[in-house]
Image 1 (cartoon, rainbow, N blue to C red):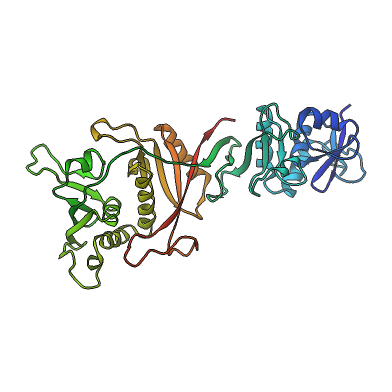
Image 2 (cartoon, rainbow, N blue to C red; image 1 turned 30 degrees about the vertical axis):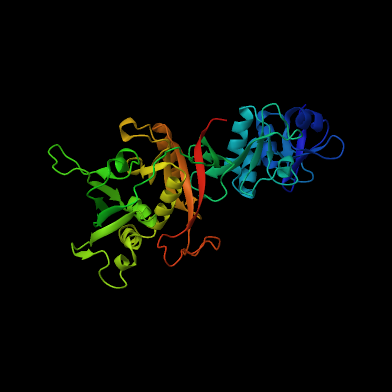
Length: 409
């Protein structure tokens, strides 16, 4: 005969030989005095569903009532217990589905909070379960996955996700697992831009008319302005982030600029204008005009990637901000890009659907999905990011790389 559990607060107590039967052999619950154990609601529901418990008493006494599902208010079966817990415990239904799925995959799990065994692991409050390596129990403490359960319609903060396993439960109760890790992007592209370039600032790009061959062929900056019957050689169009980065490094100057209305001015025309403050200020100002505050974030991430000897190019075709090439020797022998990079604010909150779309697309084109969590100086969110110097129009930024990919536990 299977034992009966007794619900006391958020724990279900089971006596008899429960310690040997459930904890020692299966990693369920936590030991109490003697052979008694305490199960979390999710653990108890799983054992009840498997038929390893005969029922659970919801009060101090009582007996099984009615049809055995607890209509009499005492000992209840799985259906009644599941419904009661879903009403009493936050997100119980989705948490149960993930717990049962990982158990079926051969993992022992513990709730990730005190006084359960998983509470001994240094895991953030958002983590629901600790899954141990196969063959490990809560007593041995070999952690495989810190699992955060997320419903399809919930949102989750991007900050602090690194190191967690996300279990997303959709509306049909299917589960998709994602691994979130601290991303690293380090390239091996050995290219130094020329000492001096001169360009013309157009509405949303910069044209360098006499760019040296290596700027595009070796550094993969910009896009050549070419055609079948081109009489002009060496013309390269730079994006605003490329141009702003080169200008900030003192490489690019402007011979003229064209505003959105088609007006033309000299580089230093108009005291107090961005042109008068230098080419970098003019290009950054134009970037903010056409893109808003996102331009500062994308520029900061672009410069971090170039500083890591990686080559960032637009990720527009993939719905991202950048795609990256880690080792470029020549554009004629270009490798496949390795990452898709999406720039988000440091306090960004993902919707699971948004996350799934990004990760699925990146996986489909054999790339790693990396999110650049960016705090830019002056945005009011971070006190740790230094304000830019008066002679440096390019804002500083704190960038955290977060890599997320599909996972099969």
